[in-house]
Image 1 (cartoon, rainbow, N blue to C red):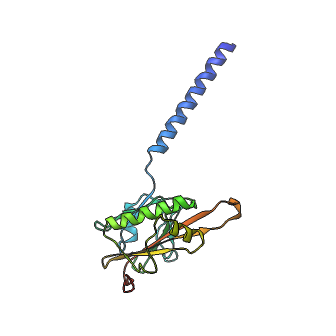
Image 2: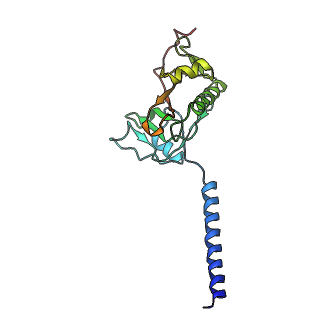
Image 3: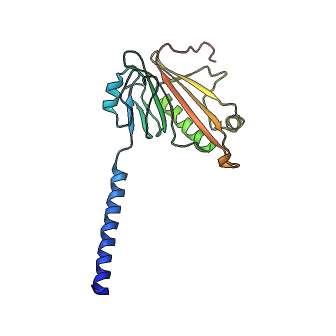
Length: 209
């Protein structure tokens, strides 16, 4: 094979490889993100069917910790009180003895976040709750998380602010931000958001202002 023919063949191979790489990248980009779609009280089996996620098959051994193995967005699909979270690396469901989901816990992030980003995520989630007519309760001691110097200082100091929300007489949410310490970040700081969602029995707002 002459050098000219060899070079032509190599260029053809390179073009094919490049084309396959481009197609692969487009397929990855077009693939929908994992998503868990549910309302509290739904059958876990139905939730698995309507979601695109790595939620496991329900067994008697795993019903208290049904967690995704790949990050997934939570779409809380109640028609009145629905909201959507960013993708969560940690998302775990709890199913009762009848196989219905009674509670979930998630951290709506795929990695621990700088303070600015963590506060932004928390504020966005609270804005969604307000628009969906959730009501903040126990606000004297647990005000909503806000992007203010005082709130940021409290989060930075390790006060771990937590806020509570009610959706009529149907659901409750707690949301908090905690400082996450690790020597691997040197002088950097990272923060972890935790959201818990459940149905009755609900908290009361008798201490609310």
